[in-house]
Length: 414
Image 1 (spheres, helix red, strand yellow):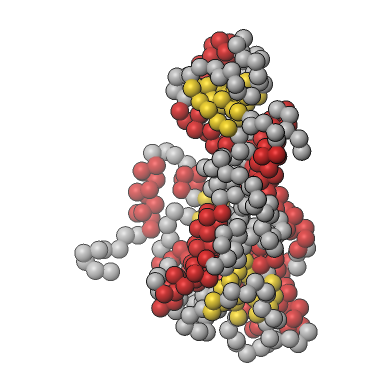
Image 2 (cartoon, helix red, strand yellow):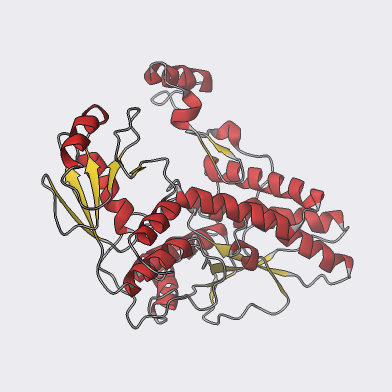
């Protein structure tokens, strides 16, 4: 370390951070926990680097595969990814399948991994796969050999609505696969033109030039540490020999809950939607997909599209209402409902949502309810519940359950 930039001990950094927090909880403010329970810290330093290094891909660049067929002899871990597996589970299940192959005397093993939208985790997952393959072959007493890894963009996180957001998703996923060291990559078209799928890779190779560096993430304290953590967690799960079906069921349930509560955001699906978008003449599923996170909201929107008359939600604003109006607009637009807002009652509305502050709701509701000919909801969860209110929407609401309930009460058929 130069004199101009002297090293600062970690303890000093921590003391400065704690002072800046002014009593706020460090863990709640600055750390987050992944779906595998891995705690991600706000920063990483050289002391976080693991002792072992990650082998890189054998070739200088990756092969662009346009075929959607799984490569011959490959262990298809992508199937588990697309059925809800977490990164640790996908790695562990791949190890279980590989161990069975090695036990049977088949050493010609390759892997196919699904690549989702968790950018840094997907980079680290492929790097961890190479470490784990080395551990497994060593345990079988085999000579070291490079892992053969094919990456395939996921379908579990794609939607039939807003297809060009799917194109953005596969772009970051392809970058994850390339930086993570995949030997070959397939971009799976998901409601966008198939000709764009290989072009994503051409741009990354020929314009971004990601392939000019053998291991672009090498030396990143965060990615190196995350690689080591994923490898350790996956090896531990592999040794437990878990039930794949049971594990996937638990993982899917957790993901569906996070999605319904909007802890997991899918742009164009459960937040920031184009409510005017229609599926008229468009396939209502993605070819080759199975379980998909967006499907519950998609089914709600399809129900609304089939309804003979448009349904209209009116946001009735009063006082400091902008934040709750924005929340309500996003909440109901996800169902494809028409949204209007003003400070006066709209007689054409099928549902009214009061948007104000908690202290103002009792008087606000008392003035509006006698005029309303349709159900009236409140945006928020005030301690004082005004009589006559039909329901509440807020940050703890299950969006999927709430939207299904209200479109059913408004006469939308299943």
